[in-house]
Length: 171
Image 1 (spheres, rainbow, N blue to C red):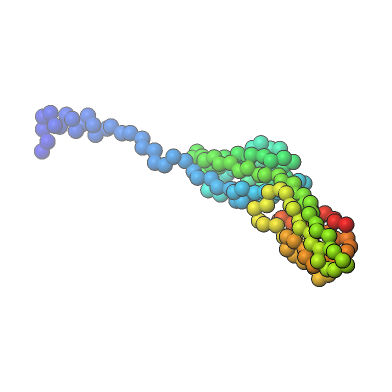
Image 2: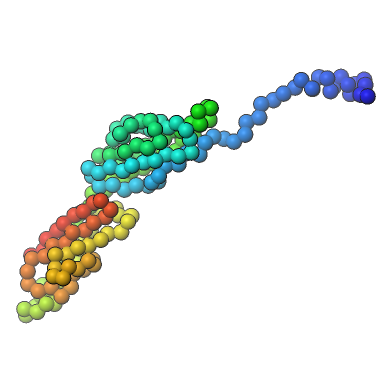
């Protein structure tokens, strides 16, 4: 049996309580995490890690709520996404959408003496995290950065990056 001073201490602290908070909030993620789009295009963004989501700013978004939105900004934009679990726990993240125009120029070397020894090299500019693809209007079609064994004539190349494309001609 506990008596005396020890009993008084136990009685005093037996009604003591303290709130303990575990964790520091939700981890909200967005997919894709760093999208690049062409001018006039859109990208679907999907948030995860929460139950409810708020997106801002509203400019260029199909909705400011929900886990999935379509974004079609006219210029490179940063969006903030705040998610909650329905019980007051929140988390925030952001995503930058890069709007990158694609263009292409051509550097060419003329054929000589009527031979098929000319060449043309595409020089694309713009951001392309996916890697460029090429299609020259040669016969047979060439699909590399440089078209080779060209005779006298007019040629064009179409450069693609995801959904963006640009075409240039060389005479």
